[in-house]
Image 1: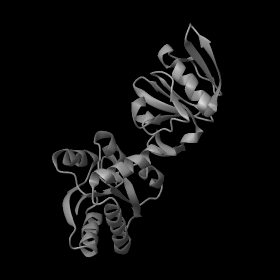
Image 2 (image 1 turned 90 degrees about the vertical axis):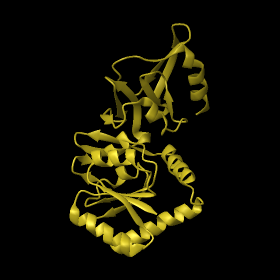
Image 3 (image 1 turned 180 degrees about the vertical axis):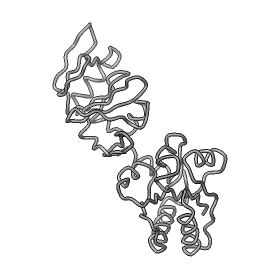
Length: 251
């Protein structure tokens, strides 16, 4: 099994190497990187590793930015000295979250957990990736940015998503606005429960729980009102009107 280590602290890197060597002699280190930029470059120029051990706080920012720049297609074990990023980490291909200093026995147990997953999926990476993507589809939370921090918001508390100036925001039930990590509503759609959320037009995705009423306008278009103040009218296009009516009648 080939492992990529993403770690910017030399003592922590050396400790990981020793723990890996002690855990299983068959494990090999495919490479080591120390920053977001270096990791993205490594992933783009090397074959996919079987597993990544990834520190969260790197020299040029949080490791989550790696996932914005590259489609990481293997499981990840996150390592950090802080537990505040735990919820955010599990939004990605996370199979475990280890606190520093890394304990050899805990790492050994985590590696065993990964091997058990491999055996369950017949050592097939495509099946393992499908497992992670399926988990992603059933998300109950979404990670957003607030200044330099990341927060985890329950999707049931999201009233709507909208895009503005090529950025994507969510508004929660308390009418608080947060910046999403992606700049595409399509990316948001991929992880939402379609029984709860509907893409009404190019700009808005709304939560059915916050729709108070709707009415027909301009022939076949629909105006949707939600329980929170919105600075503009939310219009369902003529093309989506019948689909919207069917969706809202079945939820």
